Amino acid sequence: MQPIPTDRPVVWGDDEPHESEVAVARASRADFEQRWGPPHFRDVEGDGLGPTDYWGWRADCGFQFFVFYLQVTDDFHVMTSEEELSHALAHLDWWRDEVVWRANPGAPPLTDGWAVYRQDDTGHRHDVCVMTSRGHAECLARRMEARAHKQWYAVEQRGTPSVRQSRPRQGWAVIRQDEHGNRAEVAVFRTERRARELAAAYDSEPRHKQAYFVEPVSPPNP
Image (cartoon, rainbow, N blue to C red; front, top):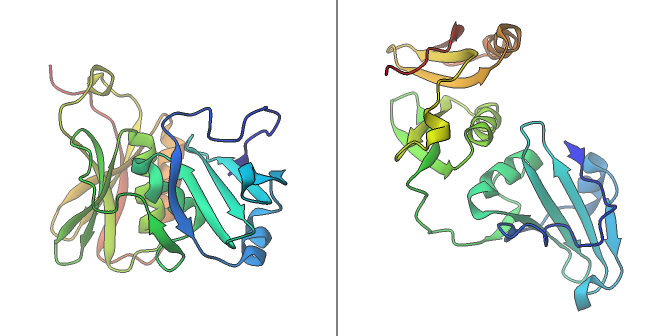
């Protein structure tokens, strides 16, 4: 992930109306800095809360989010939109034990967008979240599957496609197929080389009765 430039006169996140504080995490400050480096920005007053340290990143998938650390409470606060919280936590490698509070945990998922779902080796499926960005959903699915044991993650469209989503796509798709013949599109790349690199990376890991291959993306039927 690349740090977001700090040469702006506003506190990170305040200029993005869809971003808010959506999670609080408890983790070792020393371990956090060892992995992510020193703060990108420091506010000695912290809007009246005391010294506050900020980190901000833009991931390779284009996702941008922020984290700030309050010395007075010794915890980290994640700033993004609610639908992107799981995505932010996955990039931080915070999966379960670190998060002590999250916004609206029982809120219903979006009805339109791209669902990241988990399927185990018995065929049972469970939605993780629904996101408006397909690229972000595919990124989250890949990161979650990298940690999975006898589970795989995929993305599928929910609700009514927008005009932009319904346009023909071009490129090369990485396809996963299980022992029962069930297929799922893992990701789409503009070049065949990038797609084959990802498929080869997945095939090189020990997977549970799954195969990965590449095929050209076919535009939808008129």
